[in-house]
Structures are given as C-alpha cells and as structure tokens.
Length: 261
Figure (cartoon, helix red, strand yellow):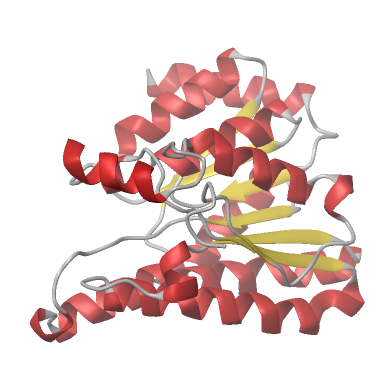
C-alpha cells in the first residue's frame, strides 16, 4: 500500500507541477481533513501533517489522489522546531515552497485548572502555540521572497471568551489570536495575509466526550439551532485563501452558528 501511494504521489507531482502548495497540520482530524479536501478540490497540492494518527492521514492522502489531486503525508512532531524544519525541507525537495499554511493541529483537555500538571501545560502550549510558530517561521521566508502567501491559524471560540474547565486550552487558543493579529501587521507589507478561524462547537472526535444531553443543550444555546460540521470551517478557510480573501488580514472569524455574537 505504501509503495502504491508513493507511486501515485510521484505521478501527481509530474501532472500538477504548476499547482500551488498548501500545508495542513493536524490533517488526520475532522476539521483538518475537511480543510485538506477543500484545498485539494480548489487545486492545491496538499501536504498532510500528522503525529500519531497515521492510518487516517494515509487514507486521506489516498482519497485525495484518487480524486485527481496531489497529496503527501508527513509524520512530524510540530513541537520540535528541528522536525518542522525537516518537514518543510522535504516538501520543497518533493514539490516547492509552501504557498498556504493552515496551522490546525491542536489538543484539548477538560479539567480543573488547579488539577493541571506542569507536563500537561507544556504539552498543550507546545502543541497549540509553538507548533504554529515553528511552522510559520519556516513558511515565511519563501512567502516574503515571493511577496505573497496566506497563513490561517485555527483557534476556538474559547480563545475569544474563555471556558471553565478548559482554562489552559482557552489560554493557548487566545495566544493564537494575538499571534495572528501581530504577525498580520508585521508581514502585511510583504503581501502576506494572516487570519484566524475560531470555530464554535463542531462535530469532531475532539467533542466526542459530549453526551446527547450536552449536545442538545448546546444546540438550544445556538441561535441557528444546530451543531457545526467540519465542512463549515473548511469552506471558510477555502474562502480566505482564495483571491476573494486578498484584502482580509489580521481578522478573527468565528463560524459558530451565533453561539457567540
């Protein structure tokens, strides 16, 4: 299977050499895979980063290739600047430099702040914040050289307003929002747009711990009366990275059904 996928990838590289390149971190998750499919459908060759969920990421890669797109998978611990550097070097060796970076990878925990250990805090901060920073640092030199590029950081509504029993998660997602705004100001003169998508409650494995009663209550609190789907987030990312999003930068856009207004 691995040999077959590798052969398909090489075939796609030859037939799609003119296509732009997008890197999606956390591509094996619900939102990440939806974003990757959206970008592939829009004509991007997509580099798919994962850390532990190899099977899901390789299945996504195969599906994109089967649909006529171009994709590669990368097992990379984005908490490591060295591993991130190696991933970008391989993407450039196989294809070219990254035109669109989607910093989607993240982890969450539901617990009292006073129960969190130092190790748990470091893991969440390094994954949710440092991972986006290391990837952005690698992507930016080529974007600055080309005077174009797009970075999308995936935050959360809890990064906007905070959540009880998710204090550390809220803090890291809030940091991504500030990172987005500051970086947009810094690289805007180089023709690069940096934006943040802050989803509300979305039907993903990360929210799999919610009971039917919890979901019913969340629907009732949402003006549109529904829980979001990964495609709702992916469609917004697709818009932001398209030419229609060229005049949008430093913004935090929240697909949340009106849960937060």
